[in-house]
Amino acid sequence: MNDWAFGDEPVVIYTSERLRWVNLDTQTHAIVADSPDATDFRKTDDLRPGSEASFTMTRLGTTGIHCAIHPNMTGTLIVRESR
Image (tube, helix red, strand yellow):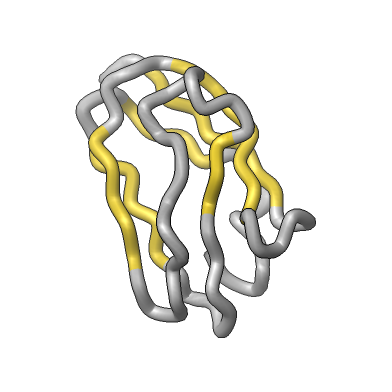
């Protein structure tokens, strides 16, 4: 996360990999899955600037994501089968 955004492209990760959210912004963010049952990822705690959270992904799926603090920050998380 940087400049109040997740980036222009979907976040793509493969099963058994670690999803790592790093807050490179100047504001606190909290990432939430729009469809919490679609993947292993559901939400982070508040991520202050410079902090991070990580999750090991085991479940295939796609979900929208957003910041609970700044709802205009949206993106897509895709978990694919390991290569």
